[in-house]
Amino acid sequence: MTDKFKKTYRRSLSVAALMVLPFLGGCLFVTDTSRMNADVFVRETAPVFQYNDVNSNRQSPRERLPGQLSPQPPDLFRTRFHQQYGLPVPGQPLSYGLPVSNPLHRAMYGVVNDDGHTLPAIPYSRIDQRFLRQEVSYQTNEPPGTIVVDTNQHFLYLVQDGGKAVRYGVGLGKDGYAWSGRGKIQWKAKWPRWTPPDEMVQRQPELASVSARNGGMVPGLNNPLGARALYIFKDGKDTLYRVHGTPDWQSVGKATSSGCVRLLNQDVIDLYERVPQGAPIVVI
View 1: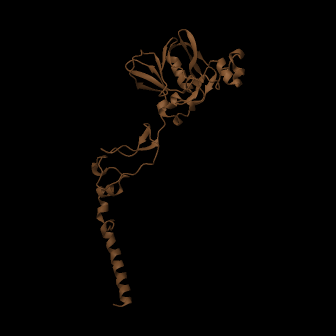
View 2: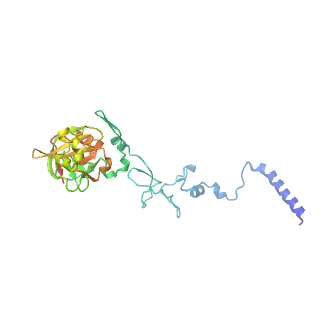
View 3: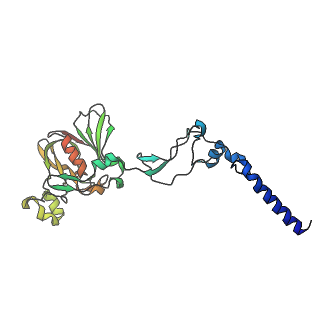
């Protein structure tokens, strides 16, 4: 067969194909008719499509075909407030996707305008969530309304009815300065003055300008007692230890202060409203 004949033969086939096309009613030539099968399409494009909507033949989203792999989520810090990534599979651990901001924490630790002072929002996402305010189960023989400070765990519990407590994270005094025992909240103050005891002034002479003799430090955002102070008395005498707020949110969960129990300012405002004067306190 000559080259000229081959070229003529190919042209003839092309012309014949064009003549046949109008009679196929617009149908397309496909070499693999399985691509027209909706089930095959769904299976081969999974996991982008997790089910088949064609003819209402819906597949269970929990099914996994043999050899089919789920997409791997990014390696993110996981919290209880993360969105679930993908669909749950029986017998397999849940995976997570992009973090979701907790609206409850936004409300609790947002900007607060209080008695002429504006407390800035606390970057709660940078704090261990164990130390954020929350209601927890708490078994104790102490009556409701008692404050219990657990110095080992850096928690303050306000005992509630029904085996519950409101738990706050706290910063505590350094070794050698911490106080423990039973007392009561003899006095409460909003935006208190800070008057360091004479012993502290002796150790830190730079505090002389805010000593009790000089009237203490005026209330404000930089005051070490923060937005509220609850004064601990024992046997009618001031222990010189306080439950108070702090502008230093990074100190919560740590031992950084000189003996007092410090909370986030937003938390100490909440505690102040819940605790009446004369409430019992136990520091263990």
